[in-house]
Image (cartoon, rainbow, N blue to C red; front, top):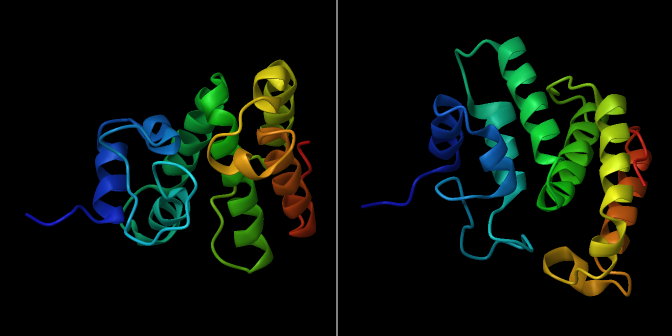
Length: 159
């Protein structure tokens, strides 16, 4: 049996109405190929690339709405803050490189992300897991880096 490909994982999540679980890296929507530099249990960049580029024949507007709703649902949990921050940067990168963006409401999402960061500030400052391990202030350091990167790419700041 071969490992599922990113496109298959994303298609499965869409079919199951589980884009939020995909974003959060929950089973069975985990994808971490050998050698991946992803700091967590899933390589979200590969899965988002599949979501944006490899799915044909889907109603793009409905996909955008479902994706936006999934991002907003993920923000209701502390564990969703990092993946949503990465999704904001990914969308800004797509726009800056003239690659087909999903056209999500980035400013609205950034404001919701900002609110979620402030709500979970203390926990994030003490979370040294994953991408937070390289920062003196845990995940807050990584979120600051991602926010600056989003702005450099023409996207909104969220931190």
